[in-house]
Length: 131
Image (cartoon, rainbow, N blue to C red; front, side, top):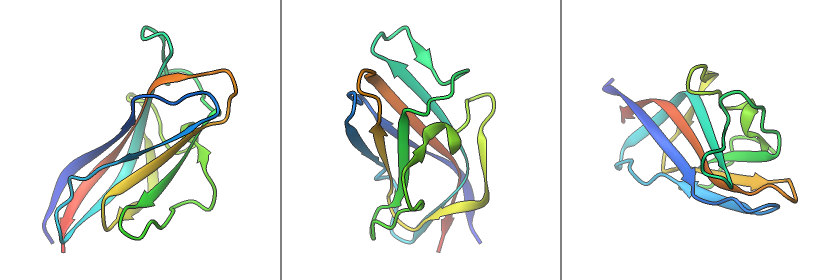
């Protein structure tokens, strides 16, 4: 089996209060499968100097991961971002790893009526496997 380390960045540049936004990664080639072993997150508030995520729990941002081609959701309902992605210094490990047969997507949703995010990043770390 041919494996190589790989990371998939899923980022939205704006997440308005009470809104949702989708990020998709289009870099997989035909016949490749991405296996995510761990995830990290970073969020930036309305003030670009305000970086959250390194020490804060962010229950107000929900996320669901989808397999791009068939749209199959990995979770029955959106989950708090902090429950599936750790910080850069302490990533969240998936056991078992998550498998994507096509372009991974993330649907982000802000459930707070008065907090806007300038940027939300979710990075999946793992490997690419050729079929």
